[in-house]
Image (cartoon, rainbow, N blue to C red; front, side, top):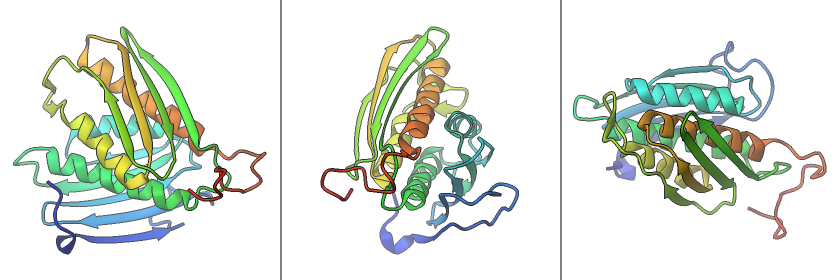
Length: 221
């Protein structure tokens, strides 16, 4: 359950560089801090990065998936979170997704010049997952994963959907996830994050033919 707005303290600074080693080059960057009575999350994002990642959320499997987003999306990403994981991982998992979505929204600004659409099909052994996404300004998730086990290690696999719900709502992103094959829960989830990263990389790359214009016939996203 997300805390009420009165319980949330959020600060956002675009083009901030709190970690000079992480964000060395100028580009589309954001630094977002989000604090509630349940969690405290900080995200630093450079969309035009090299795939470097520091993730310390207290949830090892989530950290592993954040590394997939950075590595395969070529984003520089720093995520630090503390939360009430003594209860369960739900609040921290969700709030990391919320804060990352906010950082994406801030770093991309009005979306001028981006490709906007992205898609990728990622295999991981027997698993095959398809992602299609659109930085449309309209949050929507179509979720088609069928994960056969309740947990991967200590991670509750129901939280995969909650993570993507949090991202799409705050990045204002349309996202379709389709599982084409797979029987191993770890492989299915990791293929999903890898495909998501590559589709994001495609969608956020600048289109030289756009000449800095907004990629919409309406002139606004």
